[in-house]
Image (tube, rainbow, N blue to C red; front, side):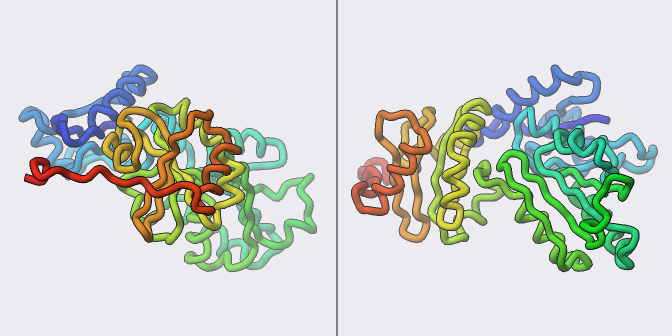
Length: 326
């Protein structure tokens, strides 16, 4: 199996390729025999990339060794953040069966294997269990590249009375949330929505691929710009209680300044430096945090309160000179 980015020549106006190359180097060091990269801009590889129907760059795919000489190998497309840790998680996830079986004895192990997990309980005494299992199995195959799915084996030790009713549980480990659903399990639409809601993060990473949904939600955005995974992890752990508290009104997000350096200045902050800024899409107002205090949950909450009370004025974008406009 090989996990391959098809990267075009580095475009100075698009920092995504060099940012990915740094992560890819770290990734290759972990499994050099199965992880490789191909530059589709080189004439030696252009025909190969075309035959594999690769037209956008960079692209990351996991190829499975089950093709033939006349047919390209089956592949799974990677859609997540372009960083080492989530790419490795994707690789491990796709190497496992799409639907695993858990018991009271290995549930803890399963829950430690991924960040977003689903466990279905379909008791044999429920006449709909066979149909529900098929729909759930289809769901697991569709989303196996993003989440982990399991079916709970109704073995001795499982509470029979509780299990008489079919149920699907979701465990969102990063957000420390657990949800369950018992109604509408025979509806693909209901299952899809449950996966969408539970699979979402309280403090997601904002990218070009998902930003439209946030801007169309009607909520203000609390942006935090980070330079690496360590900064992102520390911020998420600190701000998670605020995201839970104000999730109905605000989107808390993180953005990689290596991948989107221009976004920092657009939010009134200094290029290349981490920082926090609040944006109201409905008015276009931006409120960069300019204080000197460390950005703890308390400091951020006080900053949000000052904005609501009108104590903080919107950032005024520098006016372009006549020379710049020309």
